[in-house]
Length: 495
Ligand code: NDP
Image (cartoon, rainbow, N blue to C red; front, side, top):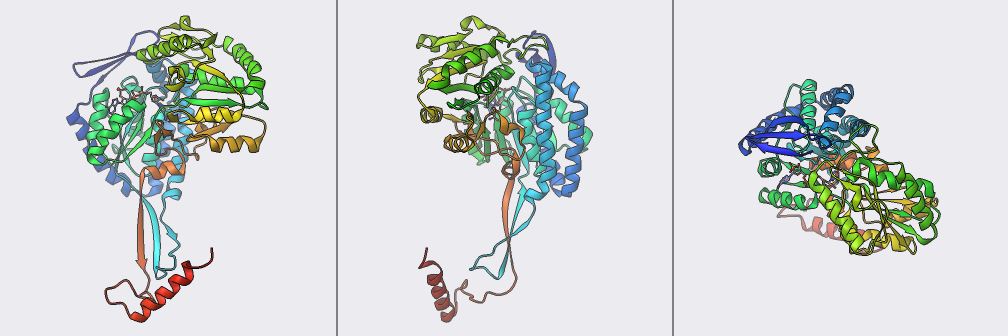
């Protein structure tokens, strides 16, 4: 979608047709600060609620999303251009996570006893996870429900208020989510601020207690620099350049189907989509033939029957064009499509082979429906090449040997790896999600995601005086001697 910001109004357009789909008042810097101040009050109300009340409110919000899913999918479709099926799928995934976070938060974060150890046997050790306060969530446009809800659901479930700044391409989706919240809960525990990067920058400068940023590595660097000013903690969900490895014993049909879906789904605008395939020599030709066959049936378009829609952000089309033309100039071969496949705002499937590792199409995030299939000697070479990326979000491996697959998964420098599927981890709420290197740090989803939006707090309760009372300025010499003896016995010998 293209956007126009004038007279403090953000006008959004359908990226496939150019028609205006919404006009949204822009939140200026002062209003961002006011929103955060309102959120602070709501945060203290929300944190003070019984965990069961928080769960009920979150589940009411969930039902709003489920019962309004067709309406929400229409807003997603209008703002991103993706087919209705894709929009509904993203809502379903987001709801699974919301449900998991709502139901598990109390158990994951509750106060628990820890072992007191030898030195502090007279103390009771307690660990609990308390809310941070106000979390600022900055989201992208490619999955405007699923991606921000990966932070929002877990932050809310952990007892925080959220101020959400969506991408300038998808403000309507964000407002729909916030309006649904206000029907589920009377307090402004979830609020939205609207605008472009300037509104996001204002949020990073505000008095939030944490920023959860999802977007490109370039913007992540700016966000991190801004957060450094106030030492605001930060979780970054960055981009990816994910690899799929095809071993000699792989189910080739399944691997090709997954590669095509992982690369072309959502017009390739998926952070953990497949951008690079490394197939071993023995199966390379068979795999490429299967990819060609499956790609032939894939069509982009504005209609709902198309497999995928337009490029949502006009500027991304030029990134795709540069990667494809540079790769061909660098000696790559187009196995499917080529520069002519780029007919803005649509890009038809492109499959490139023999792309040199130094080419932009191998190093930078393409974020379009382009799949590179390169031949490698063996899986060791595949792992090495996969790991030679600045990014490290996710990866996939196809092999029939479970132990081998799991061992390879461990060697990949990524936050997540699927064996015999792509994106398998995205649908399992209990699994954490996040990257390495330029793909970011910190984790959303799962118990780690709940803890990401909490502060670990240690509390001790002295039950009685210590038998060996040495934590004082005038300890008894006998107590010190005994402590020293015990210390040597305990740590000075054995393994
Ligand atoms: P951008 O980095 O361009 O923007 C992300 C968000 O940051 C947008 O809301 C943007 O606002 C905002 N923003 C821009 N400038 C600033 C600033 N100076 N301070 C604070 N916020 C700012 O990413 P895209 O929206 O283009 O999203 C695509 C990227 O997101 C890809 O790299 C993709 O891989 C990644 N991504 C990662 C995911 C993950 O979970 N790891 C999931 C989905 C996407 P505006 O759009 O209004 O300019």
